[in-house]
Each structure stands twice: as C-alpha cells, then as structure tokens.
Amino acid sequence: MDTRSTILIVEDETDLADLLRYHLEREGYVCRVAEDGERAVAEAYRQPPDLIILDRMLPKLSGDEVATRLKRDSRTTSVPILMLTAKAEDEDELVGFALGADDYVRKPFSVKLLLPRVAAILRRQQSGGSQDEIVTGGPITLDHARHEVSADGRRLDLTATEFRILAALMSARGRVLSREQLIDSAIGMDAAVTNRAMDVHIAALRKKLAKSATYIRTIRGVGYAFRGPEEES
Ligand code: CA
Image 1 (cartoon, rainbow, N blue to C red):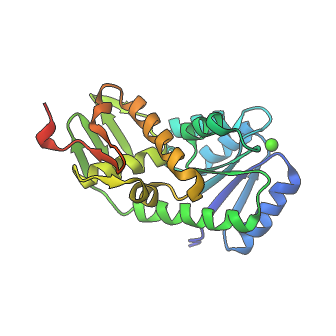
Image 2 (cartoon, rainbow, N blue to C red; image 1 turned 180 degrees about the horizontal axis):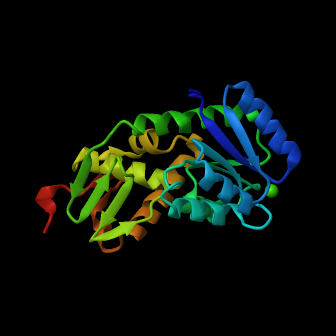
C-alpha cells in the first residue's frame, strides 16, 4: 500500500501549480492539481487528500468558498488547508483565513518556506489522529475520533485549527495555556503573525460556541484557559 501523503494543489496559474507539484513530488508527496474552485471541491470529495494547498483567487469558486464547502462536508471536514493569498490583506486576510484555512502563505513565496509548513501541518494531522476519547466540559462535547464538537445540543462547524485549539484547552482542564503552547499544538506559523492569528482563531471559535463562549477564558498577559468544573454554574 502507498502510505505517502497526498496533496491536492488548487491553483489556476499553471506555472505555479507545476512548480509546486515538482517540489512536493521531489519531497515524496503524491500530488493532484485542480485549476478552479469547482473542480477542487469535486476532486476533494471524490478522494479526500491529506492536505489541500488552496489558492484564494480562483475561477468559478473562490478559495474561501471552497474552504467553506469542504469544512461543511463530513468527507473533507478534517482535511487541513494551507491557503495561498495575494499580498498583505491584513485584518481581512486573517479573518478570511480563520474561516477555513489552517495556515496561509502570502504570494509571492519561496518554495523553501512552504515545504516545512506543509510538513508541519501533516505531522500535526497525523499525531492528532491517534486520540479517540470524548472530552466534555459543561455543555461542550468534543469527539476526537469523529472530529465533532457540539455545544448546547448544536453541532458546530469548526476548522481543523479551531478544533485543535479547543481540544488543547479542554484537555488542559482549567490549566492556563500560554499563546505559545496553543500555537505549538494548534497552529505553527511565522512568529510574527501567530499572536494576532491566535486571537482571530479564538474570536471565531467563541462566535461559533455562541452562549457557551464564556467557557474559553482570556487570562490577560498569559493566554487562555477552559473554564474549570468548579466554576460552572
Ligand atoms: Ca489564482
């Protein structure tokens, strides 16, 4: 059996798609290429890859829309996405990326910089796959094996990164985790953008948790914690 990781490259610029494919295959990955958003979604549903490298500006469906559709479908909800974005879009960019991507790289980028990020995402994905327990805290239930989270009886649509952040916080059971610890277990980007990115992820996660959002506490100057059982009302 072929145990090499498969990567779906979604990029309409043929030169860039070829370049990515060349370097990723040289690293031992199996690559497929989709040139527009619709084909990307169809291809990912047909045969879910281990990672998707997704350009944000695409014909037919935008990268954001592709990410949203993949996260909504049980076949692809846990497939990590590395988004390729146009040059600096600041806040908007971070918010967009928090919607569906696990990491992002700004164009133009060097392949040398991209390869370790790809390896890091795949490593995190594999180490996360060995847990099978169900964790509960107040009205929130997190199922590692099924990659599902529910709060107040509602099933939540979390990105893979939001899922890992919540899993890390819940597993710590009230212990405070520093931003660095959370970044280490859930993200893994350039140090320069990680703190802001973590805030954006936490904000997105709280929004999805709705009235259970208070279970994620901000510990000023330190990091975040999941509300301990003694604090439940
Ligand atoms: Ca493009």
